[in-house]
Length: 437
Image 1 (cartoon, one colour):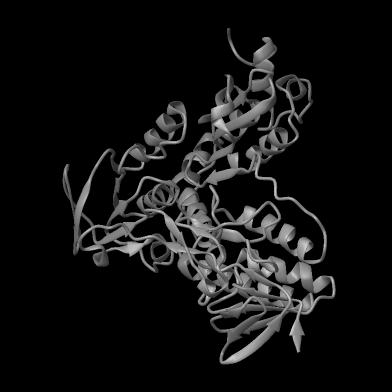
Image 2 (image 1 turned 135 degrees about the vertical axis):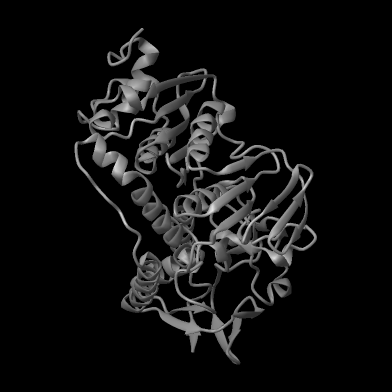
C-alpha cells in the first residue's frame, strides 16, 4: 500500500497538511511520537497564553472594576487543571480533524529510509511524498550547570507557582514567563544578555519595562551568566537565587531520524526550502519550525502547510513572508509586523487619546506605523490592549502595499481601538483630531 504523502510530525504544520491533503482525497499518514498539536498546543502558545490570561485577570481585574465603579475580588482556583483540560481538548480535536479529513494517524517515531520510504514502529511506509514537520525544541545555553535549570517548555507546564524564579533570556518567551509567574505570586528575576526585547523601539521597551517593574520583577540587562547552581545563578553582576531556574535562550530544529540519508540541505537554523516549501530533494517538503526562517510562529506553520500541501497536489503556490505578524503576550500586549529596516518615517498615536481605550480603562500604549520614502506602509509596532488583533490589520496593510493615505482615509468603527491605527495614519496629514497640538 502506497501513501500519497507521509507527514512526519503532528504539530501545527503537520496536522494542517494532513487535513488539507486528506480532504482532497489523498492517502496520507501523519506520524506523531508524542501528542497531536506539537509545541504550540502542548508547550507553547496555548498553555502560555492561558496562563497569561489568568495572570492578567488576577492582577488587574480589581483595578479595571474600580475604574468602572465595581468592586471585584479575584481568588486563584484550579487554573492549572483548567489549562490541562484545554490542552487535552485540542489534542483530541486535532486527532478528530485529521481522521474526519480521511487521514491516518500513526503514533511512533518516524525514521526516513529513502525519499519514498519512512519507517515507524518497525513498519515501512511507501510514499510518493514526504513532508517533514518535526518542529523545534528549546536550545539550552552553553553554561556550566545548565542541568540545574528547566526549559521554557517545562516552565509553562509547571503545576505550581514557585516562591521565586530566575529566568535566563530576555527574548519573547523569557519575558512572558517572567511576567506570568511574577503576577501569580513568584519573586522573579529576569536576566538578559543584552536588552530585554532589544528589537523593539525604545518607547515600546520603556512601557514594557515600566510594567515589569510595577509587577515587582527584577530586570538585569547586559548580564553574563557564568554558572547555574541548584537554586542560584552566578553572573558578572552578582548571584541571583530562585527556587526554579528557567532558561529561555532560543530554539533549535528537530530533525527526523534518517534525514542525512537524503542529502537534504540544512543550516544551523533548520532545513533549507524554496518558496514552494520544497527541499533540494524532489518529493521531500519541510514546513513549520524545522525549516530555516526568521520567525518560528504557529500562524506561519499553518500557511506553510497549506502551500506545501497544495504543491504536493500539483499546484504552484508560493510562500510569501511579507508582513507576517508576531505577538508578544505580555501586559501590555505587543504586536509587530513588517521590516523596520525599510522605514523612512514613523507616525504614532497614543491609546490614552482613543475613546474606546478610555471607556475600557486600559490606556497604556500606542500604535506606531512605519512608511518608506514612497509613503508605503512597511512596518508597525503596537503596544497596548488587544495588540494581538490590531497587528493583523497592519499585517494586511503591509502585504497589500497600502500607503499611509489609504489608511488615513479609511473609516473604522467608532469608538474602537482600531481607530488608533487610522489616527496614527491621519497624523501624517495633521488630521488626527483627538490629540492636542
